[in-house]
Amino acid sequence: MSGHSKWKTIQHKKGAADAKRGKIFSKLSKELMLCAKSGGGNPDHNPSLRTLISKARSSNMPMENVDRAIKKGTGELKDDTVLEEVMYEGFAGGGVALVVSVLTDNKNRAAAEVRHVFTKCGSNLAAQNAVSRNFKRKGQIMVDASTIDEDKLMAIALDAGAEDMSTEDGVHEIITDPAAYGAVVDALEKAGVKTASSEITLIPDAYVTVTDKATASSVMKFIEMLDDIEDVQNVYTNLDVPESVLKELET
Image (cartoon, rainbow, N blue to C red; front, side, top):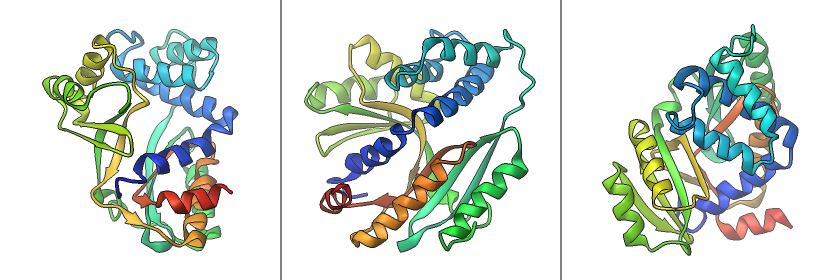
């Protein structure tokens, strides 16, 4: 993705999702449950859980909902729901690749709903690994460049085990291996560095720049429809939209 629009594209997608608070809370609850189940319910010993709790707070999710989800994950509260992680893959207009992450208690229902959106948008699901092989699972941490000097942040991040750091569009981007993510998060917190966003995500090997307004609008609508599905946790893409086109879409 070209540097001038990476953060703007992420913010545009996030803004559309944040407008639907109810769905955001439901998705966060599932993530909190799964994270607490796999890594424990103590955020002091589970950096991913700590990041999720911070994300929940920034989304104004009631803390009683957060606590309930964590306790369900650890088994402190009885819950018979069994959640499974499933990935679906395909393409949107302009050759944009999509990887749809699903967390569901009913794989048949989730598959039918995802397939319906692909069909409605004139696309088909791709074979497993046909798209995801071009993405890498990484920790991605964004920091407002106006809040800390690049060299200082780079020293903190790399000393803690980060793979790389770059500065584009007024934002420092730190990339880590998933195994080193927690250590980097801890180091930033100890140094008092405030993050704009922090998560383990799928990052594409290369981005597809879409400059046509109609195509960009169509692809973003496609992504939004997938995000609207209750079982969909995230939609990862290699979409890059220039800032000028994003501004046109927002008018």
